[in-house]
Each structure stands twice: as structure tokens, then as C-alpha cells.
Amino acid sequence: MNAAARKPTAPAKSAGRQAAQPTRSSVKTAEQAPAKVAPKVASKVAPKVTKVATKVAPKVAPKVAPKVAAKVAPRAATKGARPSKPALPEAEGMPLPVETVVDAVRPAYWDEACADLMKRDRILRKMIPTYGPAHLISRGDPFVTLARSVVGQQISVKAAQAVWDRLAAMCPRLTPSQFLKAGNEQLASCGLSRRKAEYIIDLSEHFKAGRVHVNEWAAMEDEAVIAELTQIRGIGRWTAEMFLMFNLMRPNVLPLDDVGLINAISANYFSGEPVTRSEAREVAANWEPWRTVATWYMWRSLDPVPVTY
Image (cartoon, rainbow, N blue to C red):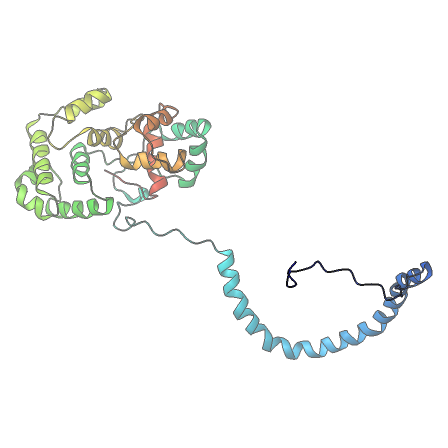
């Protein structure tokens, strides 16, 4: 075997002496000693320590306290405070809050719908109380509702509000005749795409010529209203459904073409996983006959500021 190879270390031989084992009496004495000595020492030392502390504390505290506070306070604030959510990018320039919208109309069914939804949907049971007295509102003007819906197609709420404000400044009465008088070019100068300007003109012509049955819509079924509205250029199913919700205030509309609704169902019911239309429809089956109300709260879960049309 190679001499350099490692060998297991042998235990050291005893030096012939064994460590003295403690006797029972020595152990007993060691255990009793602290109990006898401690009270005597404490009774002598404690008064002296207290005397020193009372003299030193008033001198040291004013100097030390500010330094300690300066170090501890920021840490405590950082540790205790939860990071605030970033402000929503569309929070500025949004439609007026519910309480200040002129001529706002509140759905008669709202309270009943909220109570019913909270009984049977665990998500809405927690969500609805979060937004207090806020509710879906309507200004009641069919032409304005449809025109605003066209303006808001495929752009952010903030951008849509800015364009609408410019249109309202140009056509303050917001009537079909005013929009027709303004024409495509002036409407486009307010920020509308040329195609949307054409849609607004076509909508205005339908209303002015009486080609839509405005006075009959309240008595018509949802699908019948949708069928008539989608005959107008630029108005698809989503825009017609927004009209049902925000103007006719129908309680059971489910706009499955609305990206915000699909995203909200994904976030609230599927932990952010992608959701198909059929899955969204299955979730919404539990909301009937109040799918409009549930949809409104789904929107609020993504953006707490209500949208009006």
C-alpha cells in the first residue's frame, strides 16, 4: 500500500486517568446554589441599577431618541404599507361620476338584481359592495347613445371622451341636423377617423329621415332592436348591445364581443387564464336574468370609473 495513502485515525490511548465523575451531593449543591444566591444578589444590585438608570435616562433619551426614530420610522412605514396599485391609464378625462351626470337615469331593477346576484355568485357577493351606490346610468337620448358608441369603437375610453368633447363643442345641441351640417371633414377634424365620420353621418341621416323606429324600440325584443340597428353603417352587434344596456336599460344583455368583459371573467373566475366565448357564456348563465348588471360590475373590476353613453 502506498505510504501516502490515508489511514483511519486511531482513538487516542487513555493517559491512565479518568475524568472525575460528579457525586450526587455535588450535583445537588450546584443546583441549589443559584436559588439561594440569586435573591440576595438581586436585592442588593437592583436598587443601584435603578438609581443609575433614573440619572442617565433623562440625559441620554433626548440625544438617542431622534436618531433611533429616524432609522426605525422609514423601515416601519415601508414594511407596513402595501404597495399601491398603479393608476389606471384611463382614469383621466373619464366621463363624469355617477352623481354629477346631468339627466342620469337609474335602472329600476338595480337593487333587486344586485341582491339576487350576491345570493348566487360568490365573486359578485364580494365585488358588488365594493362599489357602493354606483350603478349603470343613461342619458336617455337614443341618437347620442348610438353616436357615442360609434365614437368609442376600438379606442380607449380616454381617447373616446376627448373626441366626443370636441364633437360636442362643434355641435353643442348634439342633434342629427347639426352633425349633418358639420359634414365629414369637420367631424374628422375632431379626431374621428374618416370612416367613423361617415358612420356618424349615416346614423344622422337615418334618424332625420325616420328610417329607424325610435318610438317602438322600448316595446321590441332585444334581438329585434339589434336587427334594426345593425342595418345602419358602422353599427354592429356590440354597438347595438351597448344601446340596449345604456339606453333601453335592458337587464339581461351579455356582450360577448366585449373584450373587457372577457378579460374580467378571465381574471375573476379563471385566475387570468384565457377564456373562450362558450366558457364566458357558462359563467354568465348563473347571472340570468341580470347579465347586464353583472357585466357592469365585471367592467368595474378592471376599471372602477363608470362609463356612460
